[in-house]
Image (cartoon, one colour):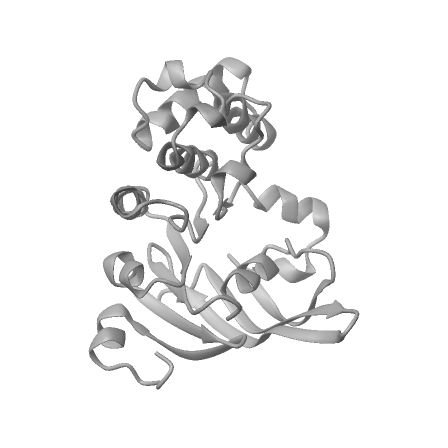
Length: 252
């Protein structure tokens, strides 16, 4: 039987506020297998993003992982020291965040930002990093790739900024890509283009993808298997066709 590339067991995360503890993730367990696209779906506040940010230990102030394990290629991410974990993030595990305009640095060219990840995680010269950045821009279908490396985020449309974010996430050939609501701020036409691009890249590069969304239409279009979350709990998990043909939980 194929071993999962990521195995999460009994993950529990809380946020501690002036009013007390808020249980955001309450014993979530799931697996991600090599080469599959897993959808995490649920309404706002269901724990989708917090689950993945807990796995990466990128929680905001007040957030604390209270229990569980998250094993990536046999290594528990929750017990790694910060240096070892930062070597994995952006290298073996890529992340696409929700809003590319706030995730990109407005004072640096997009090319510099893509090259930064390559220079940090790979033993590459600037010339090699630039060549790789051009290759990545072509891979995500940014026209005039070599010229556009010099552009700044504000010079790109929303869809093109998202393509830059995808290029950054793919810079070091990750085994696992986490896409957190990658199409939320985009219009329907551009959303479809980005989803098609993600699916094509996933199949071409053979990587695993976790796609976080509140949109069941997105889930139906590109994922292989679905995890339905509500109130920090898993309501059900199923292959995407089974979920739509025979939903097992009333919430779904």
